[in-house]
Each structure stands twice: as structure tokens, then as C-alpha cells.
Amino acid sequence: MQDLRDWLKEVEGLGELKRVKGADANLEIGLMTEVNGQRRGAALLFDEIPGFQKGFRVLTGSMLNARRLALTLGYPDVDSDQQLVSRLQGKMIGFEQAAPQFPIEETSTGAVLQNRQVGADVNLLKFPAPKWHAHDGGNYLGTGCIVMTKDPDSGRINFGSYRLMVQDEKSITLHISSAHHGAINIRKYQDRGEPAPVAVSLGHHPLYLIVSAMGIPYGISEFEYLGAVAGKSVPVVRGEMTGLPIPAASEFALEGFCSFDDFRDEGPFGEYTGYYASGRGKEPVINVRAVYHRDDPINLGAPPGRPPHDYSYVNALMKSISVKESLVKDGIPDVKGVWYHEAAGVNFFVVVSIRQRFPGHARQVGFMAAQCQAAGNHLGRYVVVVDDDIDPTDLNEVIWAIGTRSNPEKDIDIMRNSYSSPLDPIYPDQGKIFFGSRAVIDACKPYDWIRNFPKVVQSSPEEKQSVIDKWPEIFK
Image (cartoon, rainbow, N blue to C red; front, side):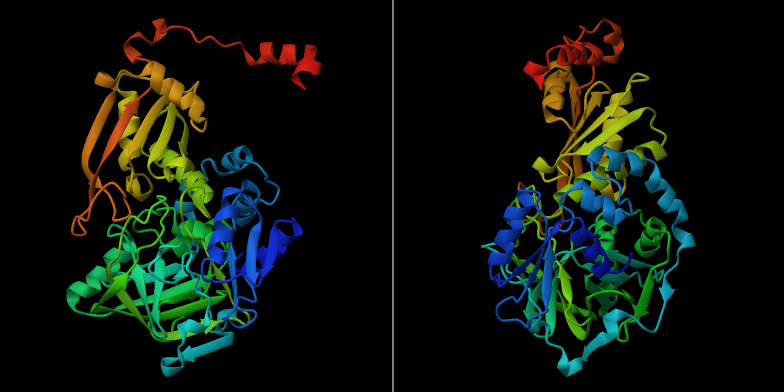
């Protein structure tokens, strides 16, 4: 579970890994990753990158389809979206509840410790850090990384996936949106006038990347949640500079401190919204004190871009399941389906299908979906609520419901002063205080006269199948 190399063997056994030799880190790897992501292609493992030591590799496109995502989650027999959703239904709440049973397992050894550079020996420039997009402001070593931080008040460890731009041999800038737990932890140190300890894993089993993007509720350890998913505690080594846990099987890791007064230019960067949205700004610097890596390390890349991109499918599926379970956990009845659409950068357009049970049911669902925990609250825009005869994953059906079942003057509600982000392309720089809005569209049949709503012009599945069977030469 913890080892990226075992995962790669499994993927190669499925015929879904391609090895690429000689691609340039300056845009070519990024271009190949973009094209491959749009085609839902194989995982790409780049080696012999010009200007870098042979064996210092970059992996992209790790989970572009249901088969590889399911394998990552421990379901090697699953090969479709529907099967995967079915397997995961109801599991998220169980993982949250079971997480405390899987505390991290500290060890003094680990593959990540095969090579070690400390102090003056640290040189980040020897590791391939692609310039992923043409107008990026620099080279990004971290895209599929996980960043470990600590709450100085409680001691609680958090990890999340954030972007890291190389500044020089020993420093790297860290960009985190202000509402993320990692950013909150770092600000607490800055408010005290103290440097914030930070550790980063840059190559690991892709399950870490899935968990890092899920918006785990505050107070639940991502390490323990990951252990619950895998059914096994995560082995970690303690960083000798920061004391923070680092996955023992990590391919490549670093640790250091974010100074409370050292901020440098970072960005722009092509983000998951499909734009260079956040511009160039001052971000905190990690002054790197130590680097650890395996022989021939693999950096897990997950560059965003105009959707679909490297990890938009993963985010859409996992976020949809997570928000559905959050609604169920909060007592909302008869939630039939939730789907975040990749076409809108995942976060900006979500559809929830319900079986209406009482007046106001659709509005309740819409408002809750727009604001529930981190998964629903971060950078939302449109929430559409539809009846259970509508497939929330099918935009044709969703648009039909909006067009025929909603009345704009009555069925669109606006939520103002909700959380946004510097990555939101429609808002100018707000001095790092980001407010956005949400539209909740009730595209359900009006509850007060639902029984009299016009019948749908549609044959039953059995009737359709009967003509398909009778006329195979027409419908084969």
C-alpha cells in the first residue's frame, strides 16, 4: 500500500504504464501530460530527462481512469465508474470513524533514508522540476506532493497537496489557499513570530494524493484516515530537523522551516480552474534543511490545467462521494446521487439528485451541499438539485431539468460572502481576503403540485429493449 513501486508494477501488469525517455522538463513533459490527460491515457513514467541524472524520474497521469483509481483504493477487480462508486458508497463515514484505530507507526528505517543531504549539501536543483505550462512563473517540484504541517496549539499533524515552486538550491515557495488547514497551521507560527516546521513527500503511493485532496474534517488525521482506507497503520520516519512524520516508503522528501518574515515571488501557475488565475504574488518560503530520497527517486506529478487534466477525474469522483456522505451524515433523507463535473473544474458545478419528501427538501439539500465541510465549501459556484429520475452525471439530463423544471424568478437562490480562493478567475485580487457567491438552482418538479406535473415522454427500459431485441440489424 505505501510503496509507489509496487503500485507501478501492478499498473504495468495491467498494460497501463508507458515509459518515456528523453522528454525535456522545460514544457515537453507538461505538454505530453496535458495531451495524455485529455485522452485518459496510460500513466507516464519519464526518465533520462535532459540535464538530470538518469533514474531521477517523474510520474504523471497516475489515475486517469476508474481502473487505476480503483486499484489505488484497493479494488483491483473494479474497472468502471459505476462499480467504483458502488464499492465506495457508505465507506467514507466508516473511514472517519475507524481512523483513530490506525495511528502512525514510527520506525527508524525506511527506503526514503537511502540517501540523505543535510545543510550545505542540500541541492534541490538536481531533481527534475518541470515547467508544466508555458506561462508558469517558474519550475514546480511539487504538484502531486503532500505537505506535512503541525498545529502548534494542539500538536495535530495535517497533510495536504499544495504547489511548490523552486527558488534556488535550498529554498522553495509554498502556495496554500488560506482556508486550508496547512495554511492555518503556518499562520499560527507566523503570528507567534516563529518559523513553521514543514515536511514534504514528493513521491509516494497515489493513495496519499487521493486523501490529501478529500477535505478530511478538521480533527481527523489524514495519516490515520489513510490507514483506515488501507486497513493498516502508515509507517513513518521522524524528520531529524522538524520532528514531523514522513512516509517511510516515500521516494523523495524534504524538510525545513517557513520563516515568519521571508516571502518571495511565486506564480503564476496554470491551475485546475483552467486559468493562470492567481497571478504572481508573495508566498512563504520553505528554507530546506534536509533532503532524503531513495535510489533512482520518482517524483509523483499531478499538474492541473484546463479540464480534464491530470487529477480532475479523481477529484470529481472522490469529492462527489464525500459530499453525498456528508449530506447523509447530516440527516438529509433520500439523497440519491451527487456529481461534480470535470468540465467546470470540478468545484464549480455540482448536481444532487433527491427523491423529494417534504416542502423545502430541495432547498435544504442545495444549501447544505454548497457549504458542507471543506469538500463542499471550497471554491463552489453552482449547485443544481434535481429529481431522482435525473442522472446527475449526465449533463444532457441535468440541462433538460434546469430548462423545463426550474422557474428563474422563484428557483434560483444566491448565497453571498461564501469562501472563495485566489485561484478563482472571476475575482480580482482582494488582498488575500476572498469572498465568493453560490447559486442554488432548484431544478426539481414543484413540490406543491408534483403529482400534477406533466408526464415525461419516455418509453420504459423494457419497451426499449424489446425493439432492440426485435430489430438487431438496426440497433446492433
